[in-house]
Image 1 (cartoon, rainbow, N blue to C red):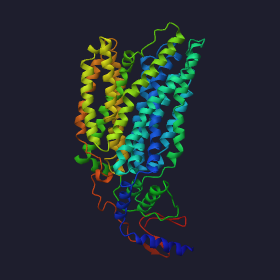
Image 2 (cartoon, rainbow, N blue to C red; image 1 turned 90 degrees about the horizontal axis):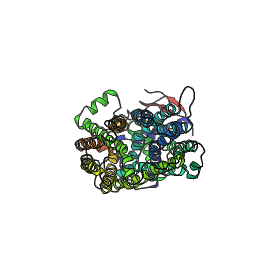
Image 3 (spheres, rainbow, N blue to C red; image 1 turned 90 degrees about the vertical axis):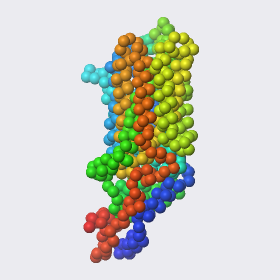
Image 4 (cartoon, helix red, strand yellow; image 1 turned 135 degrees about the horizontal axis):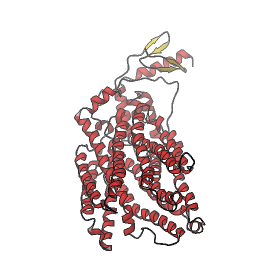
Length: 554
């Protein structure tokens, strides 16, 4: 085919497109009404592996910190500042990553950033396993740095996985797809406890002539380092996933490429890119600072961002703060500190108790809660599930807080406290812990969807930092466990404010992402200017590629 024939063919193709707005809405309808397919399963698995890795890496340090104390503090525990440092470094990094990657995914695209955050997680995880002590830096300081870097990657995973899942999902199953992705956190927690139990191999610890510390140095490195394995497995699939059609249409303004992508991945699960295709940029709202302010300064839009951000903040105050009391619960169910006299036996029993005890707590509340949300989120709706969860948590924390000392007086009373603890875990996940992840991925327009989710998630991580830093210190005032009852009462207050913030949110079930954006979809995309041919060259108000040669905008 000659150059002129090729250009004439492309000209005819462009002129056949009479209304890009209608074509856009038709493509979106095809995505929203698509039958459940292997592509949907693949999207959930690829995103879910990331959340499995995130939870594993975050949770593993709570067990690894105990191991670090045995190795580097002469068989004792880490100091308060050391323990706080290695545990709070990741949430701080996550806070940064959620804001940064949330913004970048809207600026440069979901596909370009998806996988980058996983590479950061893999690198940060592997580096932790190789940390050591030297004249200029000790192992705890090195761990804090690498856990912060890993946290940046974990933070990026939140908006990217949520947005990619929601933008590819059919409307009727969108909630379940996003809930399934987030539910992988429960399995990540559970797996970290299983791995900790396996690596703390009893014969090796008991036969250690150094008192157990030598072998435990292998244990914590294996426990943390193995967290990179699922990330490596998922990396290829993340790097090869197609750009979401909504981003291609609404931000890149390339409706032709987006409709082609929809046809391909809905039928074959793949996508094609033609480097010689004419890129026809439509006219659509652009993400700018002024447009961002104009959009969110409207109360109907601003209240939604306020509701998603504060709900996540309130929830994470209690979600991460509840972990401060896990040692009490483990002691009550027979998984407390060892009373053995042999150093090796004591180390083994303590590691075994904390690992198996956390497996029991995960199975008793965390995992069932995630999957209860999965079952009802598309039938009950997101808002009712979140309201129910916050309401139940308010009642549970009132009971736990005001009745704390009474429930420490006898074994049956302690059993009641354990039951309430597991119930709180259950209603956190069968409630706001799941829905605060889902709703921000649905309620913002495409050009700000990732940014809005990143801001909401970062607000939640700010709550986690406040909980871990502030309440950890507060709990130690006045003697052991003096403040625990009052902390639980504070949790009840934040859960009550979560009920109020949920009332700011719309119900998103069975509504398309475009309906939830609060923007008129008729005329959202405008056709490009008429095509002009001059001296055999197609000219249009956008950059075009013809036979590999770039033609500048007119």
